[in-house]
Amino acid sequence: MAYHSGYGAHGSKHRARTAPDPPPLFDDTSGGYSSQPGGYPAPGADVAFNVNHLLGDPMANVAMAYGSSIASHGKDMVHKELHRFVSVNKLKYFFAVDTAYVAKKLGLLVFPYTHQNWEVQYSRDAPLPPRRDLNAPDLYIPTMAFITYVLLAGIALGIQKRFSPEVLGLCASTALVWVVMEVLALLLGIYLATVRSDLSTFHLLAYSGYKYVGMILSVLTGLLFGSDGYYVALAWTSSALMYFLVSLGCPLPLFPWGWSLPSGAASALSFLPGTLFANSSPRSRQHGGLSPPAASPALPDSGSCSLPAPHHILADLPPGPVTPGPHWH
Amino acid sequence: MAFTLYSLLQAALLCVNAIAVLHEERFLKNIGWGTDQGIGGFGEEPGIKSQLTNLIRSVRTVMRGKKKNEWNTLKF
Image (cartoon, rainbow over all chains, first blue to last red; front, side, top):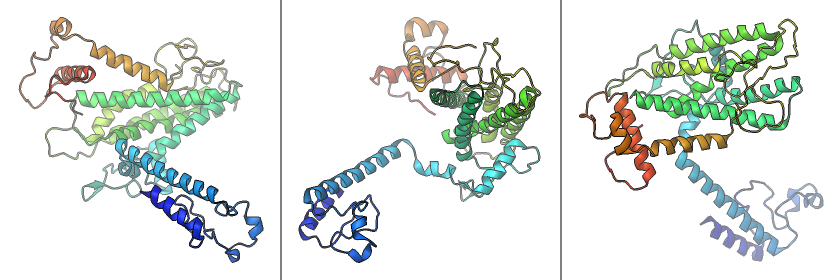
């Protein structure tokens, strides 16, 4: 085991003090335990930040070796546990993006009406990674859009002087809860309707994260242009996202095992209610109803000034300290 | 609505518990959602009602901890 070998090697080393054995975690080049003053510009000055050179304290050397081998053992254990739950290779597929793909995909999400070919290309039975295929789903954009949305909600709250650091965390967890609930509802729907498609959970996660891009644009436009801008942006991004999701089903790859909906059509039909739900118009104080995920902007009353002072731009978050429970504003 | 992850956990637990306490003989048979009613053969399309019945039965079996019925599994 790594622990024993590290311990043994280090134990013999501190007696012999000849060949340096850098601990597995630290990749620093200052491997010279024994006198290698030529390696450092100023050996005296380097003592402070040269971790390995402990001025001849054998117990400290042993303890450090022990600690680093324990740390590497812990790292291996964490990796093993993670591999049991999440297939990291499949996850890596979704993050294989580059700048050109992200730019084109964002443009596609906002304006999908002129895109012709919606098929996901395959190469030897495996779908091409997003880097090489514009139509492939990815998880980078949804993750970034989610985080940006939370930060933007914080900014919008700060404009109204309603910000506090707990609000950010609450907004993030609320949005995460909505995402999880939506993916669970979609999985349940797919199971009940016995739709056979190649939609994995990560695909569902990706497609349900794409709506955050539209939400960000709507909130930004609402902040800049007031309520009219917000409604226009909302209508535009909602219809664009609906068109995008429906178009995923246009090419019809037929699967050999029985009746199955094309994956895009399945996802589109499942996502339409979700899209309508998420992009539904903002709530003013009177509406109870279903609220959009996290904190969706409410109507600022005045729509003309460039930076309005909207008193309820994010109507769902209570102004004071947050307590869980039904808060209808 | 301000949700937290803990409230999601609570809601999930309560939902699963609600499904698990549906009594087979007193309740499900009276609505016609019993496990031995109309499960039919291995047809092409099971239909939503039989999928729901299977789901309820699977949840109850898993929650009970002892696999009384070996041949029902939760298929996704």
